[in-house]
Amino acid sequence: MRILLLHNYYGSSAPSGENTAFDEECELLRNAGHEVHAFVKHSDRIIARGLYGKIEAGIRVPWNSRVIDEVVGVAKDFAPDVIHVHNTFPTFSPGVFSALSAQSAAIVCTLHNFRYVCASAMLSRQGLPCTLCLEKRSVLPALRHRCYRDSFIDTVPLAFSIALHRRLDTFNRNVDAFITLTPFQKAKFVEAGFRESSLHLRPPFYAAAPAAIPWSERRNTVTYLGRLGTEKGVDILVAAWLKWGKDAPPLDIIGDGPEGARLRDQIGESTRSGNIRFLGSLPFHEAQKLLASSKLLVIPSRVFEGYPMVAREAFALGVPVIASDIGSLRDIIERGVGDRFEAGNAPALLEAARRNWSDQQQLRRLSMEAKNKYERELSPATSLRKLEEIYATAIDARKARAVNVRLLRRVKYDGVPR
Image (cartoon, rainbow, N blue to C red; front, side, top):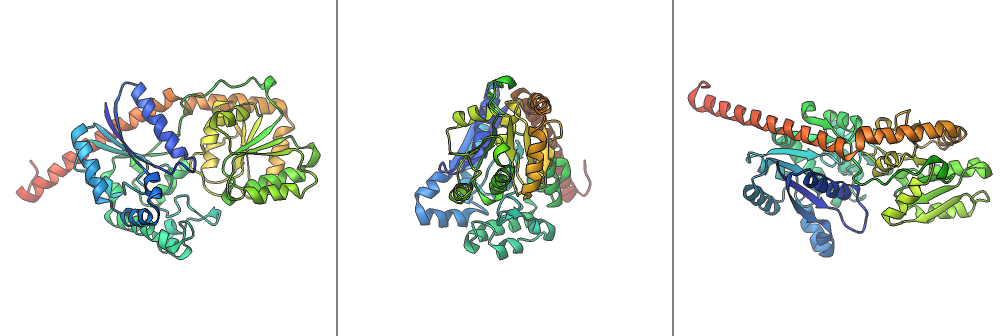
């Protein structure tokens, strides 16, 4: 199969799970024998141009004719069977879907986040869940609350893009299949007006998962791995551990972010902080080694996640997970692979952590089931099979769409279909 992949890489200054997922998918398809052409853009080029680059990019967010013309030219030359779009922000713009609909190729889009229906892309505001724009089918709440980077000016292009493409019905009219990561995400896009039959579930896979460390060889350690931001709920995790006191297992906090300094100060002021370590940002493979050797991962998010990359990594490594009972995490963290607690509730987190840590045999069983979940749902072989099935469905949908268009044209010009 000939597959054209489109992706805008986010800036290299901040690690991006979407960038990683795109790279891994390219390799997965090539290794399977498909003929793949990746056409990409880089946000680093916009950042390097300073204010001028930012202004130009903002203007082109709703519809970037220049880049769209490039994409159409590439599609004509390559003649793919499938055009698979990943991130269109900020360079490609959603207008690319309308322009590509004239091609014979099926169009597939992975919905890594909520960018097409939410200016913040995460259905969140000020570190808490927010679905006002979905409920009202309006972008006015986004503008009122300055949802992108807390800036009205920066929010305007994104809000206008959402309103424009909702008005044009860009996604229902031009995309043959969407890939959603969880049932929660799928339900939210249906709520936003996307055609349910075009939304297909496929969680991210882990391309080269290292072997799981035997349970008896692991450290008696709990891990948090991710960004240190208000929305991630790390302050709740720290508060729970300080309340647990000297009997708490060691907690490794891996990552950095805007809340890092405040959290370190919070720890420094406590006399019960000896079992909490801030390790900062670490190279990927080093962080994976620490995660693999731990006995529990905590994901304390306050907001709706997509499918956290760290969750798929924990499953692959056989690490049980306790997570906030919110959004997609409800779908991801099943009872057999971990536990859940009320989001933003430090006592509830503490109770879940204590309950699971006190029964090491049960924790070991959760570890085994987490590994089984990876093999069943997140392995490269499983993911490739599902992706090829979605491509086949999209190709059939594109053919049916073409037949319907021809019939409509005949009715328009001849009065009856023939």
